Length: 301
Image 1 (cartoon, one colour):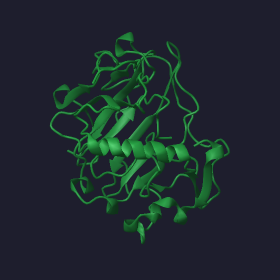
Image 2 (tube, helix red, strand yellow):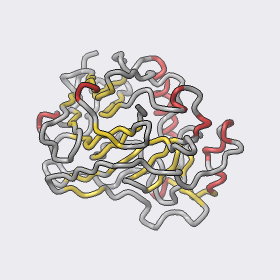
Image 3 (cartoon, one colour):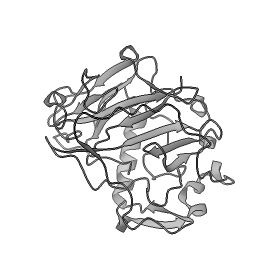
């Protein structure tokens, strides 16, 4: 079983790193982007698209009104032959250094002084606790940007309304069976970019060892912990708590499949501050569906 995943129902919060404002990005030659500062990618040939896409996508529509999040540069993006690269700010480097130190010190299964998780994971697989990994976003080379209007690290400009309209979209991470690169897509076929196979020297070169979905928060040393997601506990329900729905895996044959309850474990740190519920029996966003998050506050270790 491959470890690719598709997350449906991505909801914005202030710590999202996936998708920079127009004032914080540069258009650079696609062949001169930071990815090629990585020593393993000096002679890399850019792949504009994957050889093939996953098959049999399950797209269970919501029973309530939802709209897709507005993602992309409003001016149509960068000129042909260039790609948008987020301009790194001083605070980005400070945050990255702090997160890397913490992640290298603590396993994802151990409570840390500055890190809290509320997530689900495949039962038979274990995470590597962020050991020997790169970094989030574009703070280190390796990710090859191919979209001229969807830069990695861009801020989401719209968000769901509490007890109102829910705004979300689909993201897919999968391994191209032909090139062996790991691709990031928005929706079924909008290509953002990929992580080349040259970056991986372990089992991940062939398959993912674990898949996790949920939320995480970071505390820089203040007394109170920040909210996760919308800041509401899952028992408040859909349109109030943050959600991830229609979660699927992609198997070795490149086909989407649904999850089964017995494959999944739920892991929460500081349950008085955060929680996870799911899968729910009547998911309004379709498929395997969870609610997660919480208000934060004074969270014991």
